Image 1: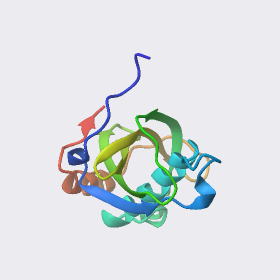
Image 2: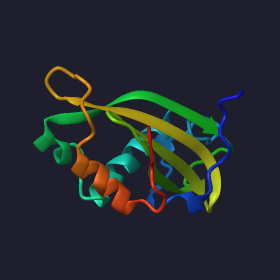
Image 3: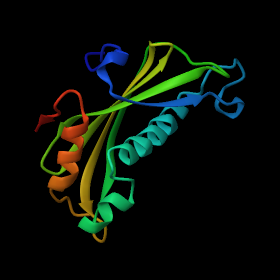
Image 4: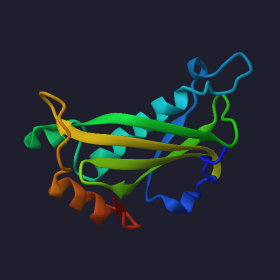
Length: 152
């Protein structure tokens, strides 16, 4: 498992979205079903975008673009259970010419449960042609993040 990432630290994130695990999200043992972590990441991603002043998807509409998911990778470190209060951290760690990589950390009382890497391509809405990340969008991210995203 050479691609497995070490657990994140809550210190790595400036933005968090709180979420309580609901009964419908757990398996018969009361443990969060693994696919639900992508739903948690999506909810937190949407709130991150709102926080930086680029609500999704309206923030990208003036540029005629949208973000399209091209990769998702999850590493599981521990299990969340029914009624746990989770903190979902989101940050951008890389801004490429036409893509962005978001890191998401799922925590319970600062204990890392899941590490998620999400890569999105910025593309035209009409024909889904990759196009450069709008400068204004990239600048909002850089101004918000505690750690400067790398450039690819």
